[in-house]
Length: 401
Image (cartoon, rainbow, N blue to C red):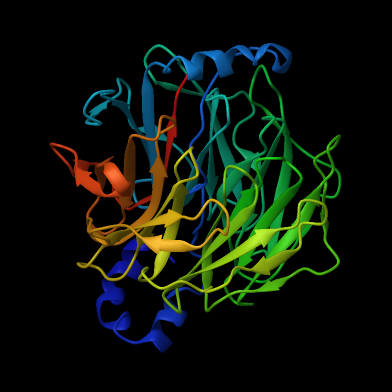
């Protein structure tokens, strides 16, 4: 269903946990990428020369752009980030048209390309990013076929493979990314079957595993990634139990920990990731309280803080912040959490420099922007919230080089 339909019914529904679980069902997108936002290289730069980007990032980077997709107006809004204040200014040519009912927006690790999963069209819109002004240009051959309910996606750390969850089709479509054009080619065996009503997808930073949440199965699936082809294979112990109606999923930058937002049970399941097998072991104290209907995740590049966009209820949106214990992975709410947001927060993204957090508010057609302060607390950016399209569902940050 469209987010507008969800928001209209959410206010009364979200007062009962049993109904919360029902809210998390269906084919509405969720998740990541709310995957973490990561940085960039110039368009067409071969993979072998992208190491220069590491030096660029270490020196402080340059301009950043925010992209958010809207499931009612069927478009992507693009903004330039003020590097000092975090304020957003519309990019020339924005908004950019996509397919019907876009669920999530994903930026590759080098900020060359933007990928948008279109739920009702069962395909993916792909764009190149103009590094000088943030404008988007459709990739030749776009949109590319996916499964029913295509929404949130994830790119592996080498920027060779892209995965998109197909919620209604209970599968994940996998593609090889052309490093020069951004064109997508489905890999052998794609789409790959997973649990029913999959909502979120993430790739660990070592590029060994993909993680997919199943809202109807109350579990998370772990799949190994073939390093040559990107093909996904379910691990023997998969799936692993979560809380009720899991939606977003994200791995820590070190690849040690995995976090799953349980929309129905209003908490966060945390796990350690076995580096060899991908097996998940619950962290002591998991699931952790402090999130209300978490629908989107993002972790700072340092791996110190996790932020959850809480999509309950239509006029009670918040963002929860947590400190991540570097040794155990345990979550502790930051001072002042949760922080006020717009109506129906649907996803969150931290900028590549770890200075700002951006939240897409599906119910109020806006983006809330925050500055990350000492201890992970959030302070609204001057001018926030910023007007967006109709029904914002996904948000991501790019840092072209």
